[in-house]
Picture 1 (tube, one colour):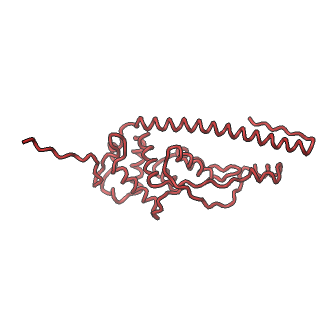
Picture 2 (cartoon, one colour; picture 1 turned 180 degrees about the horizontal axis):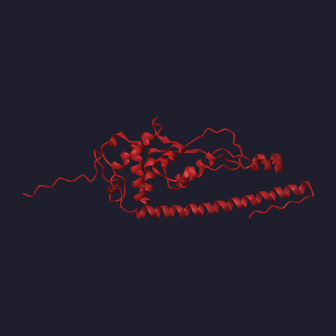
Picture 3 (cartoon, helix red, strand yellow; picture 1 turned 30 degrees about the vertical axis):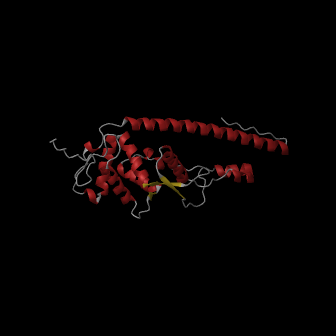
Length: 251
């Protein structure tokens, strides 16, 4: 008679009481990690809308210790002559979500009329008159609201790219939020998060960064060419109505 087959050990870490590893050996998240992230998301989304507004996600990053320049939406809060600060921040965040394929929904943000903080609008209106309306304030871009899935995915990127730092951030977050499920579990062990950064994730980030740089340079060159064409068009119009010639330089 052959010996009995020993029972197979379930490789899935338990989500019961007590901390378990956040990642499998192949660096996919375990149920322990996804359960924690879903609990955090539910805490941030008490109305159960299924998404987090950029401001809400930004405050979460503040809570766990991100510096302002590391917070994509907050670092984009700069008004320009034709866009409000929140519009520019929304655009910056959407670009980041798109680059890393982070799941999100596009919502319309309610905003009042844009007031140019630079004074450039008034100057251009004085020079161009009614022609300025075609290049003035732009429509506000859509607001990217991260979904529950996107929230999990972007946190995976953060943890696997800098595990030691994110362990400290998670520890800070657990003390601040005091989530009911984890009361009595004690401090978060360092061992639940990988000891070192995942090389595959670092390679992915490097590839996305290189692509973004290349894309940005191409968009800048396209904008320069468009500006040069518009300048030549305005010069041609001026030549038709008078003898005064203006020269536009774009460097």
